[in-house]
Image 1 (cartoon, rainbow, N blue to C red):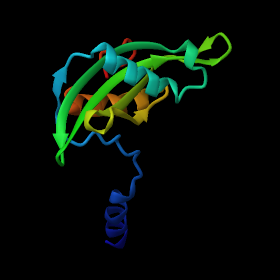
Image 2 (cartoon, one colour):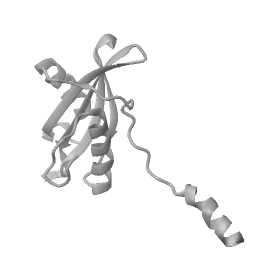
Image 3 (cartoon, one colour):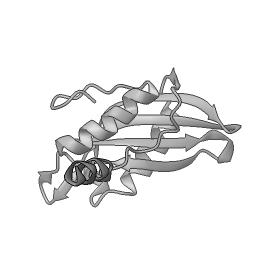
Length: 139
């Protein structure tokens, strides 16, 4: 009986990687304008080792208002060199742009090319209503 209680008490102790927070609310899909694309690509490039080599894949965007603050959520992928001549594979990302705050950019999460990161970020994008299709894993 003691072993059963001990086992039951440990069931809730499994550590999991937290999902990137996209606010928990679906977005209204919007087209990505050239101005918005520039904000996104500039913000992502600032976080890469070799920003000049960045190649962006599909990006989807949607807008919503949370706590009275308008935000644009963006899901996409980027591939950049990790060392000279070697591309690191598509990295999924989630970002937010705040139009009312001078279009400030916030990188919510950027994964690596592992399946765990792809599934985690992909799940958050789907929950927001921005499912990205990817050759390795459906994001």
